[in-house]
Every structure is written in structure tokens, then in C-alpha cells.
Image (tube, rainbow over all chains, first blue to last red; front, side, top):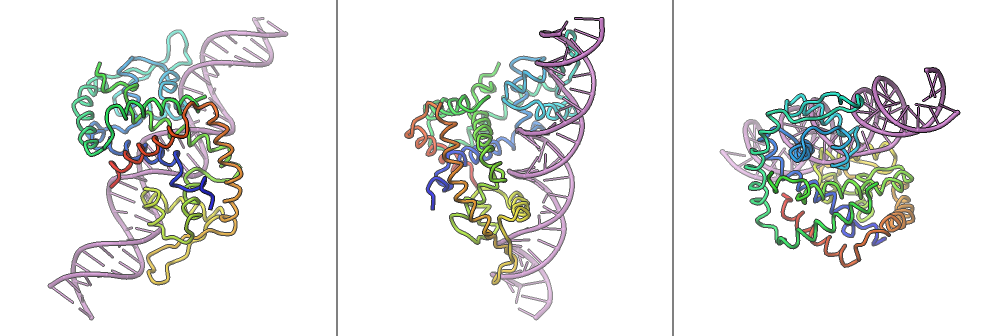
Length: 146
Length: 146
DNA sequence: AAAAATAATATCGCGCACGATATATTGTTA
DNA sequence: TAACAATATATCGTGCGCGATATTATTTTT
């Protein structure tokens, strides 16, 4: 009977559930693009700045490289990124978008914002709520990041 | 150059990251208990009400049964839950805590709130922020749940 | 410059999470 | 009551996510 151990009092459980459900809401659009949500995150990183080493991508997404490496290998098989050894530092693997990977930006822009805002129509939160939510999540992320 | 596709503008990426990092913060305490975070969630469900069918546990955690079944099988191997066929409905598997599973509630109470509040000390959010955050996450969860 | 430490990436193993499918039991309908 | 639909759970395959460890290349120290 410890109130601290009740599921309904857990912010972490809500984060865990909200993240799963919102990520899941992306899948119809992402399936049309032929990718998963983590792969979409990698694409966003590369659309911002092409040709980055594995470490930089991992840091940007706050993931371990042993998560990102297999992710990139799968994306390479899909033909959306290519990897080549660094010239000055041969330990690095530089990851670049292929033509297909670059073209997916426009498709994503056509599908995803519309698809998500449609699903969010019934959500009572307003723009300012999302902005504050983003700030509070950033506080939490900063508290726990290494 | 689509602002909608920039990582920094994504609430979903923040949810995904915050959930990962906060869950990760539980691991030192959970390792001491010998369980994982999803297993801890199942325990919280059973501490609230012992002896539940797989479906009820899955609904409470908003997970699919094909996620929960293997989770429970692992927990059975660990000796923290037991499963028996339902009497009136032989399709059901009723999941109950073992003595070990029940004893873990006190251990969890001793370890987890203290361990988490220690790590949260440097987080600028106040009690009222967490309460509003919980409400907003509930709005999001309600919007996307089936 | 050889040896040791560090850094970048990869590999392995395990536990989720879930779509698709299978199996057994119960409920419903013709 | 026999056929059919629905329900509860399980199994299988794939993709994360990460701790532990390995490999190769670079940097630092002796």
C-alpha cells in the first residue's frame, strides 16, 4: 500500500507509455516511407547536416553507438545512406545520404506533419502546452543525460 | 530546410529520449532487485491487485499480450510470479505473486523513491510541474490509445 | 620509436515491443 | 447441436536499446 509505488503516481510510466503511443502514431506514414521511427530520427539528423561520423549521430540522438551502428547498417541495406571510412581518421565511418535518402525529405514533409496533426486533432493540448511540455522534457533530459 | 522536420522541434523525440533516460535512471535500483523496468511495472500492477489474467495486466500497462506473455514467462523463471489456468475460463492464465514477489515490494519501497529523488535533486521542475506534466501526458496517452 | 592509453566503431547476447499468425476454449447462431 | 465467430493466450520474426567485450586506428607517454 505504498502510494509511491502505485502505477497511477508514476511520471516515468506515463513517459514510457506516451513515447510508445506517439511513436506508434508515426508508423502509418513511416511504413509508407519504408522506414522505422529510429531510422526517421537518423534521417532528420542527416537532413540537417549530411556526412557525419557515427559518433556525432549517436550523440545527437543521445543513443549509444552500439545502437546506432546496426541501425545504420540496416539503412545502408535499404539504400538510404552510404558509409565510407574517414580520410584523415580511418577509425571513423562517415555516414551520408544517398539520392533516395535525400528525396525522402520531401515525401516525409508531405506525409508526416499532416498525418500527425490529423491524429492530434482530438488532443486538448494547445500550442503553448506543447511548448511548455517541450521545455519540461528538456529539463528532465538534461538532468539525466551523461 | 523544413522546420517541421527538425529534430529540435519534435515533441516525440523528446518523449522518446526522456522515457529512455528516466527508465535508465531506475536501473541501478532495479538491478539490485534483479529485475528490469517492464518487470517492475508488472510487479506494481500485481502489488495493487494480486492474481490477474494476462489480459488485465496488458491493458493496465497498455501493452500487447504478445509483449506481456514472454515478460511473465521470464518473471516466472525468476520465481517472482506464478501462473495457473483459470478455473471457470480455461483460456485464461491467472498471474499471481510468489512470496518472493510480495517481499520485493518493501525492498522496492526502500530503494526506488530514495534513489530517484536523489537523481532528481538537480532537476529544476517543482511538484506542481510534475503534476501538470502528468496531466498533459495523460491527455496525449488518451488521444492515442485505442 | 616502442609501449601504453585512448578513441571510433563493431560484435554479441538479452530483453523488450509489436505485427502476423497459431491454438485452444468459450460464446453464439443457424 | 453442429457450425461459426469471438476471446485468451502463445509463438515467431524483426528491429531496437544497451551492457559487455573486441578490433582497429590514433594519441600520448616513456
